[in-house]
Image (cartoon, rainbow, N blue to C red; front, side):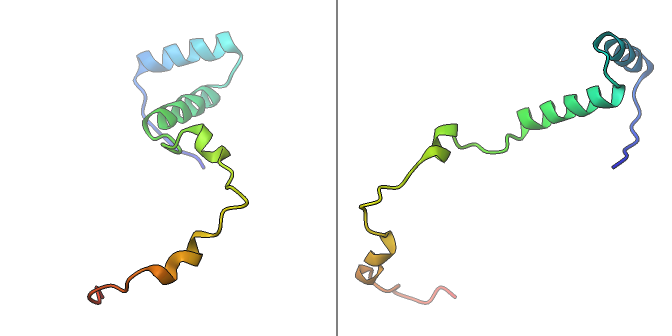
Length: 78
């Protein structure tokens, strides 16, 4: 996708210098900066990484087998 944005000349000058120093395109630097900003402000998940390593206890019964013990609702909420 192409996106046009206005950048002040001072920022463009800095961007050009950094792009030249790092042998990167200006687009690549802007793309990386935007990805970093979005990740910092809107993390993909607020769950800690070890949460996704969870493995269930194989010997434990499935929780749904206990549903028959639940009382029915007192009223229809719909």
